[in-house]
Length: 112
Image (cartoon, rainbow, N blue to C red; front, side, top):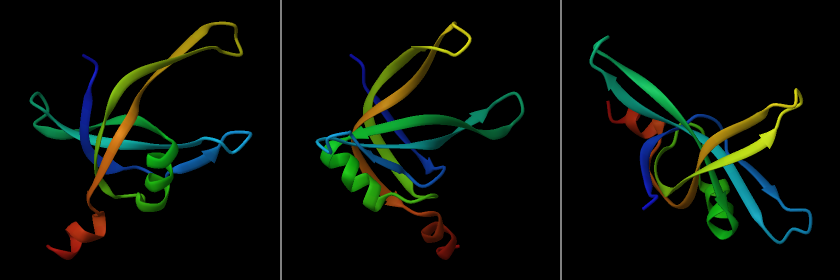
């Protein structure tokens, strides 16, 4: 089973693009998920690249903002291509099937 569930903060405004014929929408953004490092006794952030398609992508592009706290559900995929130097390159990303806004950075600061 390939299933990923992440909760973290959005690093920058989502990038919304339409395919050449406008039939499909793709939204991409990154999410920082905190992790505790037991060696340094500090929180560290792991960054995940997120992509969403079609109706969910359009909604994400409208609702998600930089700093938003989001829950992402999807699957891990790998994108492979031949780099300019001729070497094969790859990048892992989360192909999201659903998202939920949990709050925003301003919400958490207002409650302090």
